[in-house]
Amino acid sequence: MSSGWAAAGALVRTGSRRLLLTLPVLWLVLSVVFLLIHLVPGDPIVQMLGEGATASDVTALRHAYGLDAPLTTQYGRYLTGVLHADLGQSLRLRDSVTHLVLERYPYTLALALAALGLGLATAVPAGVWAATHRNGWQDRVAGVVSLVGLSFPNFALGPILILLFSIRLGWLPVSGAGSGWGFFAHLLLPAVTLGSGLAAILTRMVRTAMLEELGQEYIRTARAKGLSEATVLYRHALRNALLPVLTVVGLQFGSLLAGAIVTETIFSLPGLGRLTLSAISNRDYALVQGCILAIGLTYVAVNLMTDLLYSLANPRMRS
Image: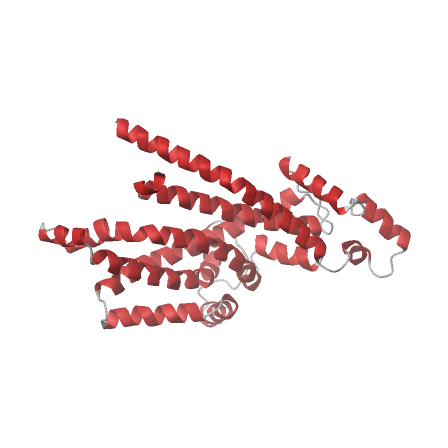
């Protein structure tokens, strides 16, 4: 019992340290997003009012949105607003940025999680299958399929899947989000598009990690004890082989969020990615900052959870 409490205490201390380390990262994300969006050429006020707007109208609207204040003042207001969960007002949509982000965020998160789930569900058995048939035709097939998955970018794979499964076969909807059970039908093709590259990377990672574990002494001992091959593979070897894969999954989740921008555009999903592209094209400062902040916070949170899971799975990481 005492060892269990000690392990729990070590995990809590590890989580607290990791959380403190994320605070400077969050501040850096906030600052970089603010500065970069203000360096983008173009005046959002002129774009809103049109080229025929008078100078007095431009000045009045710029003052109404606080864009005539010095950059340091705008930065201070922005940080204060973030601390109070107030991300400002969208210049184009005339709505709260917080409301717009929260409205679109579930679609992007669902897409990223679905792509992650499909990637893991494909990569783990494929990697184990390739490792247990090293240098056989099964291993070569897994290698070729992984290479194909890495070679197809989202913007190329998405239209191919639409042409095949939506237009030619008519099995799945072309675009949109749907509702209820229809949401999952609309999500399937985007998830496959987004998760194929991740599945290819993780398949190679699982294969490499499994080959390393299968050569360890404890595997030979387990087999000598008469344990079944399935027990040796999945209960012993795979459990240890997944430790480095956890780290890769945490890092690749950021790529899923970035890739969601392209994938949502291809499949017309009303997610955060399409909202970000629209805000950038309209020079909507507050909305761009809110969207990128949500993506950055998600990435930081996922990496924090990955660190905690790694510490939970590997007791040596808690010290």
